[in-house]
Length: 219
Image (tube, rainbow, N blue to C red; front, top):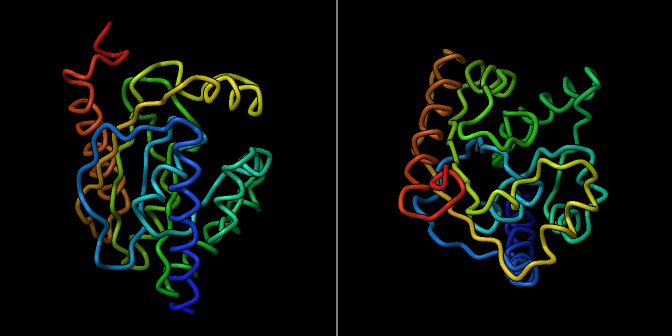
């Protein structure tokens, strides 16, 4: 299982090294490193292209919205190593996804989730939803926060119409991003895990904007 997954992740990295330049994605800064332990990675959500950027640096199964299946290039990269789609409006789908999350981590497979539940163009994250943190607390999973930020407001995926927004964003020459992987958090208190990860992410995002000439600097 591990060997199969390792080969799949290697294939995905090769694909992303090919895909990201085509999309014009430029990594302006990267800090941190993946955990040596099997972990639940939690990332803020700016764009539906977030997973293909994050998965250049970490090996994890992605929990993604069902709408992602309609997006060119991005869906292909997700399929290479496993993606679990969730329908946000469907309670049964959300419950099933949480069970899948637990099984994957129990099987020694990292998982990447977006606890805001939707993309946001706000300066700080939306409040993280508790579901994945409850599972982490109950099952003693390591949680690692990730902060991902875009330089220009036009790069944030907050418009209606997924395919239209995809082509709008990637019809330009470049999309500049910064990313940082945080430290490990573990606790039997889900609120502590949620708050610690959310606070760390907001602090990291604020630092990313300093001196970057980004849209929040311009306010």
